[in-house]
Amino acid sequence: MTTTASRQLRHAEDFRAAAAFMVGAGFHPRAGRTTLRLAEAFAARMGRSTNGTFAFNIAATGRELGLQRRAVLNHAKILRELGLTAYVEHGSRTNSQRTRHGAAWTRQHGYRGTGTIFAAVAPPVWDEAMGRRIDGTGYRARPVGVTEKGRARAVAEVRRKAESRARQRSTSCTPSLVVPQDHRQLKVEGGSNYTSRTRATGRRNIPSPPHQNHSIVAECARGIAIAEHLQREVWWLHRGCARRLAYVLRPLIAAGWTWQALAAELRTWGLPGYLRDPAAYVRHELARLQHHGHLAHIGRPAIGDDQVDGDGTRYQAMFQARHQRSDPAWHSYAEQLRPQLRRRLQEARSAVPETQVPEYRPWLREPEELHLKSQSLEAAYGPDVSPREIYESHAYNRPLLVRHQATVPVPNQGWLEQMREEAEAKRACAVLKAELDNWEAEQASTVEPHGTFRGQLYCAPTWNNWTGL
Image 1 (cartoon, rainbow, N blue to C red):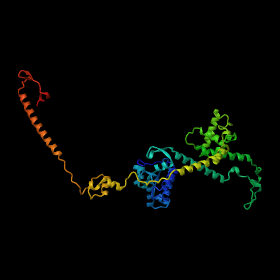
Image 2 (image 1 turned 90 degrees about the horizontal axis):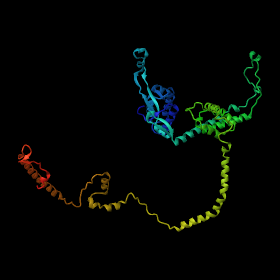
Image 3 (image 1 turned 30 degrees about the horizontal axis):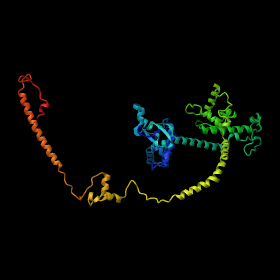
Image 4 (image 1 turned 60 degrees about the vertical axis):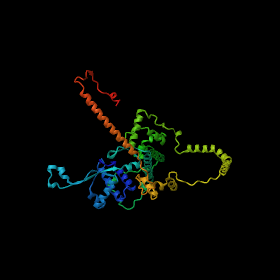
């Protein structure tokens, strides 16, 4: 946990999705279906802990999956190498019963080893592929938002799930569409024809005649369709039931509100965070707004019907009108201007002379023949040095071993003259220093104790006194 680069996961669904992505992407050559089976077994144990941790018992896991001990350990290692699990506690052979009972432990308590505890984590590669923005690093990192790619992916996933739920509802027979049957006309085949005395003497429940109000059924179907539209447009409604949401919004739908107007109204509401029951929240919020007078005119929608174009009729009419307005201009161009333009373009192309395309020559590298001619290799390096040796010496920045030289350079003798002049200058300085030392000794012997020189004021020699020397 302290060294992993992956972040903590608490839900089994996230761990399953991360494992499927990492194994399917081929990040590990030995990962496969058995690795996903082990990840599914780990995900089933995550619900026992609020932090997403689970115990790892090798023997029990092997019996559950029908695998040998070595196979369980190998695939657990693959999950750790993919960044999907991290150690919370390493297992050992220490008797946990001794730790639990302390000094009261006896032999009757038996032996139980310390188990390994893993934490489910998500690698950064999976978060980047899903389009999530992560705050922090390591195990304590948390998702704080999504990128544009992640937003588009999440919207597509929500719409796919909503369409899947809609297809499932359409295939099943809903209670509102079940036609009631007259039980008096049913024919009983087989069974017992015995009726108890209590039931025979009791009050009989005479079924009411079949009655079905088609207007109510059509109204419910319309409300459910509007609720499904809202679930696809408003993100925090996708967890709720479309039937309950249609029942809650029935007063507004009956008053003439369209799904566009309802979506515009619901987007203005502030959410208290995670909603377990969106339909209950909508019902409570509508009652609160109506109580405070913010939604007094419940029959007046936020968006009028004249602003709504759900079936696209206004758009099609606008497109057809624009096409009719531009149609004469297009015909005028096609009949008059287009032939002239094509003829003039052909004349311009025929007037341009054909030019021969020059041969392509790379501008970052000159031909080797020109390079060898400009270098005069034989005069500079000798006849036995090849161009390859010269290129290698330039590339690796090492001296070139010249085996033969065409001319022997004449040594420069100027350094001998310079050394001779320096020796003479040092000798003259030594003589001058010796003379100065003798003069200072003579002057010190004639100085009186109080600093006078034979009745005159003594003054220390300065550099101006020695300029004559």
